Image 1 (cartoon, rainbow, N blue to C red):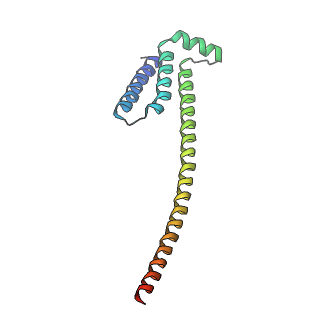
Image 2 (image 1 turned 90 degrees about the vertical axis):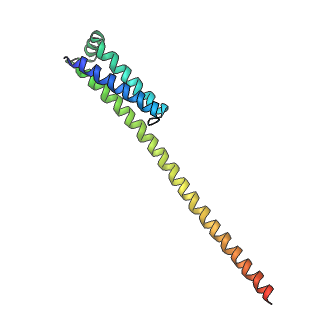
Image 3 (image 1 turned 180 degrees about the horizontal axis):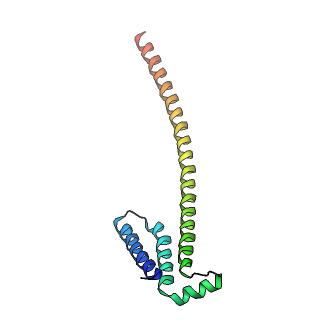
Length: 128
């Protein structure tokens, strides 16, 4: 079995895992788009040895199947960067929400303390 056939089988299995993950709700559709595109690109490159050889010659790659792994690696790096960007954005949101909650909690505690003081004053007046 050549490396291109092996890579195509792996890509097809991975594609099926992506589709099943979306179907079960484990992976959001928005996140799956990048993975699906990458699977399709790698699948096309795996099947069409002529295209793979042409691109390898164009890019100066001596062993054409290694171009498959280069494309896959670059795709994974893009996806990791996208996920890191999303995590950073969520981290900023979490920091803001935590700060807003702390401010809200402090204001609420101050209001509760004021209400307790008012209640205490009313009770003192009633007792007199």
